[in-house]
Length: 306
Ligand SMILES: NC(=O)c1ccc[n+]([C@@H]2O[C@H](COP(=O)([O-])OP(=O)(O)OC[C@H]3O[C@@H](n4cnc5c(N)ncnc54)[C@H](OP(=O)(O)O)[C@@H]3O)[C@@H](O)[C@H]2O)c1
Image (cartoon, rainbow, N blue to C red; front, side, top):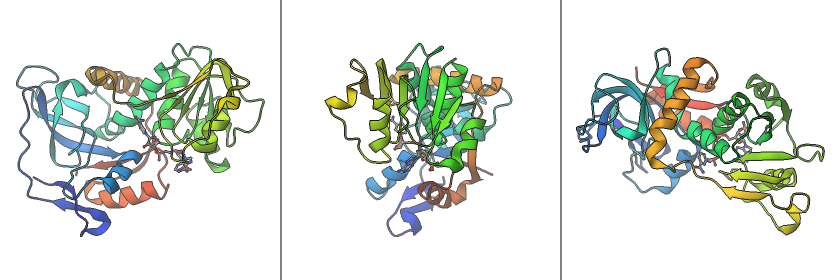
């Protein structure tokens, strides 16, 4: 079987191998024929951290070639989206049945593959501030992989959504996502006060966002692309009672499939439109990783099996 593996002697430290053993699913795992997968920014970091011989790949969509032996999850032949811990950048992969969801008709494998980590992060981080109906929500890095889903889901959830983007050239994209207000900088003291902030940028962006929190507001910090934030007591002087909460998409494990089903349903209904900034054949995975590292991708980078 073919799949990508880390190899320091290969270009970009990644090699497309053709000699993997067929995956052997556990009783609660289905065997998926992968039709498309997405690359997450976080995976570009993992590639540099993991040892030689590591097999990456977390976001997958495809067809079930063997249902889980214990009878759980999608049936054989079903089109599904799934999330795995690794080994998804391959022809086939084992997926825990409760980490997969059947796709409604009309949702493409490419759109589906964009959903798992970025979509789960956006959906679950918005729940940190639930209910958001009628409340002010700020999404930083709003045209990124997570940000584009967060803006759309917050709008669909009835929030008044402010999108912070990296520069004026990204503002039109944020408006297309449905954001009610779009800014490049958070230094304007008239912004907010925000009930909820979703932040994957960190650094000064998070510090400014904390200054714009409402008194009961919460900033869910899920990434630090711009470095760690410097925060102290006086950063909360206008918002005593507000909090900053570290957020990880992974938990709860047991409802990942349910949440993926929700995201896929939103896509089918048209209330969530994945922005695919790059779609290539999976043999061009290395080029896609480089584009993501160079910040050349608007939204998600997806690789498809031809
Ligand atoms: N905690 C969790 O469970 C979790 C889950 C998912 C992701 N993450 C982390 O969250 C972060 C964002 O993930 P993502 O997939 O949304 O990434 P992404 O697709 O690369 O998007 C990043 C967004 O942040 C903006 N940005 C602002 N300052 C930046 C800087 N200094 N470097 C790079 N981008 C910057 C980018 O602007 P441009 O459009 O100008 O590039 C883009 O809009 C990553 O650090 C990732 O590892 C964590």
